[in-house]
Image (cartoon, rainbow, N blue to C red; front, top):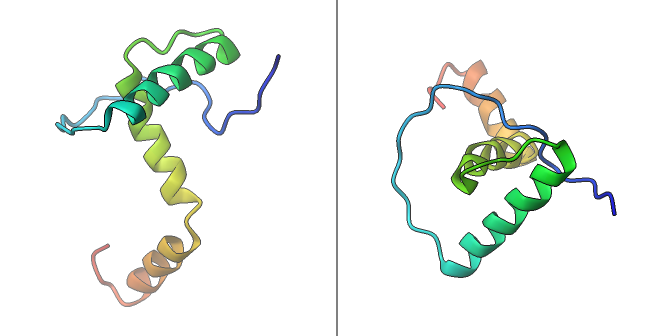
Length: 80
C-alpha cells in the first residue's frame, strides 16, 4: 500500500542539540511514522527523533497565521 506522507527524505544537515520530553504515545507514533517513511522513501530514517525538525518545519511552513506574522514582522523590521 502506498501512502502520501507529508514528509519526504530527511536531509543530512548539521543539527543544533535540543533535549525534549515526549509523551509515550507520541513517541510510539513517531517510531511508527519513521518506519512508514523509511518504507516509502526506501531510506531507513534511523533514529525517529530525526523526524522532529522536518515535521516542525512543515508545520510552520503551512501555518498561515505564522507566515503572515513573519511577513508583517519583516516589513516592520521586527525580529521574528
